[in-house]
Each structure stands twice: as structure tokens, then as C-alpha cells.
Image (cartoon, rainbow, N blue to C red; front, side, top):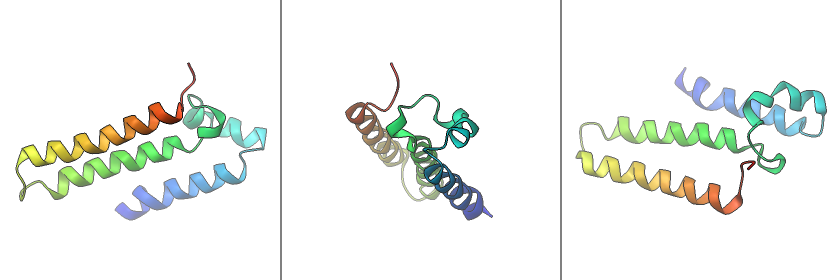
Length: 94
């Protein structure tokens, strides 16, 4: 069930958006997910979803075995790389 909600459904939505990215009706249908991004960065919302999933997995799997400093460091590394990607590719409208 977790795999369905966390991977399959977002992948299906991304596939539909990729196939209909030139169709104005499809773009209006998914504007709530892609409205804040530039047209070439329509996929970034899905990357943000997977980034949040990765952070939750890090915090969950490292809950008992690893000290809090390591958990915080791994989450900070993930967030830092996401910030570098966003600033490098300029994905948002001004």
C-alpha cells in the first residue's frame, strides 16, 4: 500500500502530464501542481514529493540505530542538494 501511494500514483500522474504537456486541456487540469514552475520544469513537483519521501525514510529507518546528529546531517545533505538544484536551474517564476 505504501508503495502504491508513494511511488505508483505519482509516477502515473507524471506519465500523464508528460504525455499531455503540449495539450492545453491537460496543462489546465494539472495547473495546481505545476503553476508555480516554469514550463520546462513541470516535473519538479514530483521530485519534491520524492524528496519528502526520502527525508521521511531517512528519519524513519534511522530512528533507533543512529544518533540524532547523523539523522540531522543526512537530512541537511538532502535538502542542500535540492536547494542547489533549484538555484542552478532556476525552476520558479520570479
